[in-house]
Length: 126
Image (cartoon, rainbow, N blue to C red; front, side):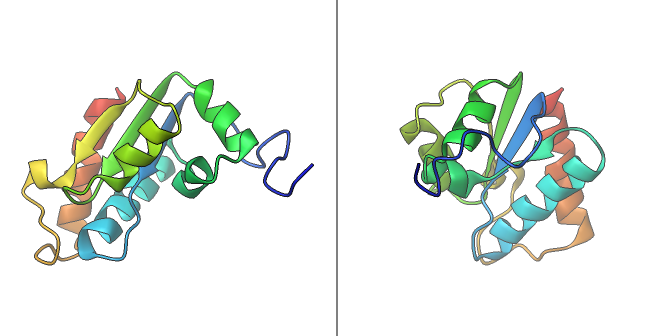
């Protein structure tokens, strides 16, 4: 068995998983922090987008067996959505930060911007 072919993910399953873009830009940081906020508040569980991209069996299996998936993309390139779709996941809610007026390179990582994303994401998880 290869390293990334573990039978079970070390993370606990959750009925609602959140896959944010955690990219290197300001909006990536906002998406990441909003997902962490939602996890802390118990509205869902931030999960490993890199594990989906790497097709880690435990992460793939856990994701396939949840009630709801939310994908948060920081910019219009939509890497998170494309990663999920290329891994075979089609049934998920999607939030693109541009829809909230947050633009790459122009959106400071502030509590207000994080809250704006967290509020919209919480509605999509409900």
